[in-house]
Image (cartoon, rainbow over all chains, first blue to last red; front, side, top):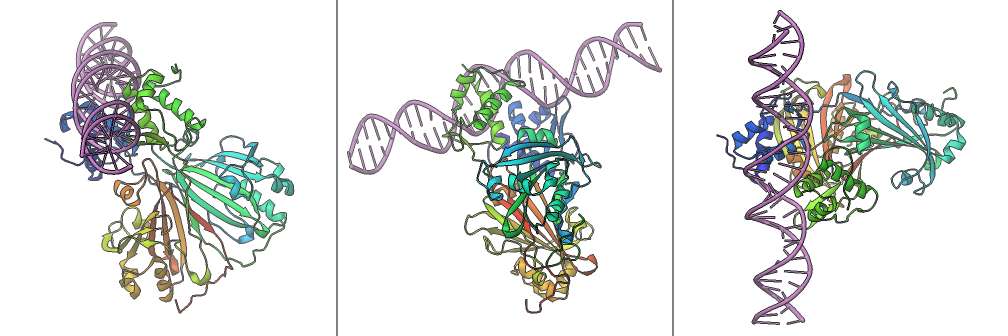
Length: 258
Length: 258
DNA sequence: TGACGTCACTCGTGCTTACGAGTTGAGAGT
DNA sequence: ACTCTCAACTCGTAAGCACGAGTGACGTCA
């Protein structure tokens, strides 16, 4: 029946066949793939070969394999949650897009040190002391989770007394900095990578799915970095959105009532 | 010597041991892991078990396995290329951040149809005819590649004669739209996912590494979507950057000399 | 001294066998 | 008619064996 004639290793050929079947709609999303025994028969290969092919498809995120039941075609991971990171100059604020999200646990405040990554972004050496405020957030509607961290240099914390309160929300931080007389600008860098094991657990990330990381640096006068905010979410469930909205003023008035 | 006592399957235990070794610096980035035979001896397991453990680490993106040489610890994939997607209101332009990138091949222009993803973004039904302009770009400095696609509804193409020229650069498109009298606003959504096989090949993406996808919608008056631009890059090599720079005017003057 | 070939070592692939464990449904027993 | 048990299905794990193929070092020969 279905002997195969494709380039590469046997298990690659089997994997390619199944992949084609998925792409062609033969196995629509949610469908149950033939069992390993059936695939053995169909392609005339041994079980380890079938397993290797199936394992490859799983590592590509195409299927979910359930013990005792079978392999199911994953639906195309369309991010269902959009986090609006729109930058607005109204009153020099920035919306994290996480204001409505609930805190799964109370925030954790620790004294830590800058890493090779966070140090340069903040204009500090690697290993300098900083405050770390960690939050685990959840979207009330969908339950989608996000890890949120603020990295606060000691110099910044000393300047703004509101920062002594660990319960201060990310959005409030910028208001506090503005109130302290800082004229803020922002830069955000977005990257993606595979999650670390603890991140996978905390964010409930399916196998072979990446995380989106957004690092947000608020800069004061003289291009001095004041605070770093980093957000981590499951890329299979969330996307980030950027836009210009509303009237944008050149000078950016700083409100005193924030 | 090093019999193992960890939860889970044997190969998981072996994988966890090696993972710890990598995290602890026993195997620094670039280092050669012990050969499969040595790992068999060290953990007193069979070769298939060792191979499965090694394969797991590879699928996690922790190591690279080279036939005939061994397994090497991957260095932490820090994105080395930053694409500046900064939104500027000077003259109603938007920089793709790809202006300096070279075209690997001539652009491809095809007539296609909106998909379930692109349709709604453009305010069209799924399956409506559109022009697709595909580019494969490369950063001249690092060789990093990017796939770039413009999805142009027929209505937009009919309105702007410059769009008949397939060689028009993405940045020029916005200038042309502005010249045609459109008052543009933008929204960009960023997501990440695992690459499709052809995308992996075109972008030279290492195993178990995701792609960053940025979809950029230009909207004219009455919130009418005019054009969709999508960029795809290797997340292990690139990151996206967003900021507000320069003076921002409320009305956004449209230049006539673009 | 140089070029070449061999050989040892590496991982890549494939088959067979065996058993454990989760899931489901059919059938026997009540 | 209902419930419970068990058999038959599923995938998960592990071992052993065999051979192919890429790489590099070493020794031999010209």
